[in-house]
Image 1: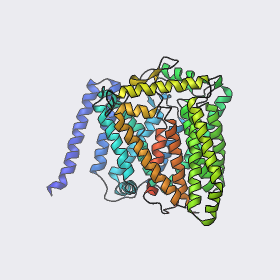
Image 2: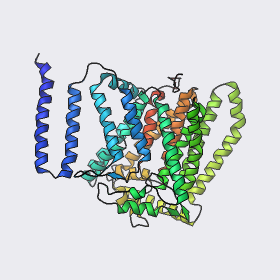
Image 3: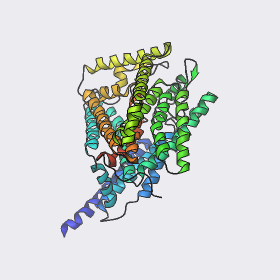
Image 4: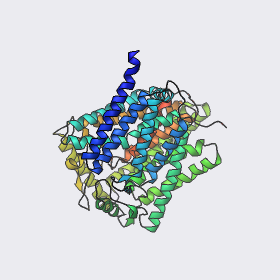
Length: 499
């Protein structure tokens, strides 16, 4: 029939047009720009090819995806963002950028070409649809605000970069959730990465020199001075050296290892094999010592939030399940309330600042907040487009570089109060549902969701004093990885592999 020839004909025409475009680009456009355009054209052509020759049925290659995801998650933790690879005649590129693009390409190609893989991912998305819908709405709103913002071209470009290199980890998390024992594998990978960066940070603090800054190289913007200046500026505070390990900033380092704490506790409680339980046991003290060596108040805040949430989840689980555990819960209630009270007092002290330098830092953050609120009066609904937060509320640091140390304020300035509410709503909906599952599900699944919740909120708490979004990859990964368990608080498939 005629319609059987429509798809192949359209694909053939598309191939011809792409070939002509390749030729025109090579002849007219400079090499640096043409390399980027070649990549976009190749992606478009290959996705079209996969869709056009989609198999009627085949088995998903989950082993390949597991390998790719393990590599990209490992690199997202241990590879410094300021170290670039240089290929002759091509733009400088970060190794994590290459691997993230490759992993995203593999995922999209598999969805387009493999019915069984796309069906598996679709089922995972469909287990609890409210959360992905809210995330999609928040992203669409941010894109719209970029289009109507003050610098549409720059804002849209910045948004698309974040969409590919940060928000793609939402999809990666859903793929992990689809894999058998995916959550457990994810926790194991993160624990090993945490030990590596933790030990690197502790050694850095002892040696009082950054191990990776000497490998810093010129990035896509052709400038390295700003990166090195920021690294140098944050090394010493109040006479104490601040470790940052592989991360851009000591706070980012502390943010990650604080999020590792609930993951370590889960491994200590639920790992069945001696090796992985020892890994979990080792990662916990390393994480705590790393936070101390980072010299970060925000890291301590994250630790308080992480331990507080773990304690609340465990207490509520004890209260709900079993007579004996109810007695334990009631007996331990004063200790829980006392611990939470001490945590609250510590948070108050940290917010105010424990010395002149910390008090000054808190004052600068309040100035940023006031500047941001005043700026939002001019555009409270749509904000000013992504990348405009520093221009509107940034404060110059010691290196005469403008910074803004509050991610929530950055979101509000980029996409208005509506964008801020949508992002906070994603966190609130996830937290409420995850807490319900963590308490009511008596199996290891409930503990897994509870650990993810504690880690996510530990990361989010740090963003009140940080706008560097590197660890948003971990936040999105953990939220998405809980997808199969959020639909119901009843016991689901166990995360613990069968012996």
